[in-house]
Amino acid sequence: MLPAKVAEKNGNAANQGQKYSRIVTRTSHRLLKYIKTWRS
Image (cartoon, rainbow, N blue to C red):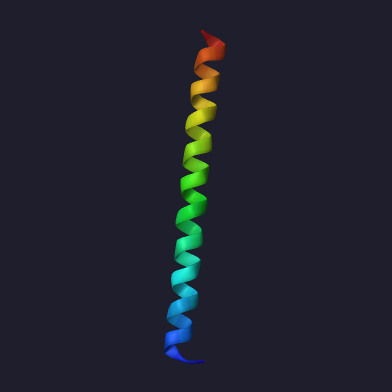
C-alpha cells in the first residue's frame, strides 16, 4: 500500500474517533444534567 493511502486512512479513522468521542461526551453530559434535574 502507498504511504499516502495509509496516512489518509489513519486520518479518517482519527477523525471518526474524535467525532464519536465528541458525541459520547455530549450525550453523557445531557444524561448527567437530566439525572440531576430528575433527582432534585
